[in-house]
Image 1 (tube, helix red, strand yellow):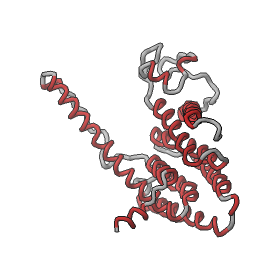
Image 2: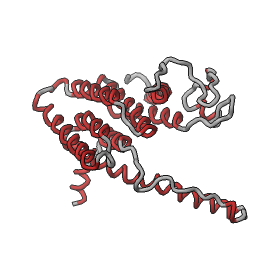
Image 3: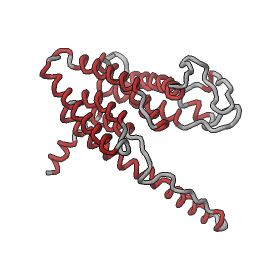
Image 4: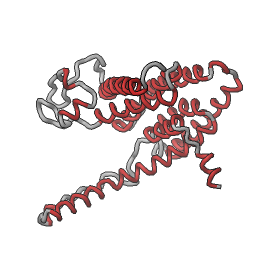
Length: 285
């Protein structure tokens, strides 16, 4: 790999991530629908099969203006975002972990987490088979990453971290009767905290709530900000008062919010960016 120019490596990794992201979109859409993953891609509105030039990740979405070439219906931006996220994640993992067996397993795990991320947003549930797959990949990654020093002394702190984290999230689920957090979120925390270990798992838990709080507030106030923007735009165009757009707040403090995306983002922040909240607290104090 050292003989290949770095820009060529990064380009290849990005293209590979885009292709995988396109496949992940198919998995997200067809999971639990009884449909095969090998079927022909088609428009979700008119059902017309997509041509080869409509299947290029990112590029096709941009050139088509986010709309179907046949019926003109809008293509969900999720397809573009998942492909972009997959490409960036693949590149970040390659930069941080280079090219190795452990890097491949971590990338595989991250791809599964990306599917869980979007699936939980769409359906407010985490399929058990995805959690089991994530757990298996986490175990394989840990073995590959600690292959030269795989002992009970090394494993026990990670097992302890996963049990404590599960107990914490599971306790929140039990006390709130599923209103604050889902049981699937508690299950998902097991493989993630097992990889991270005790110290990093603490950062993982804290960041999951911080990220959740920030993003939830942004989502909650988005309708109000959009209403303000439309009102200002309409006033600048001297529109009549009755034509000012009024969008209702469709998200409140009592609304259910999927928590798995916050956990997954926190996991990536802690594991890939090596962010440690204990070090932050120590530097502040």
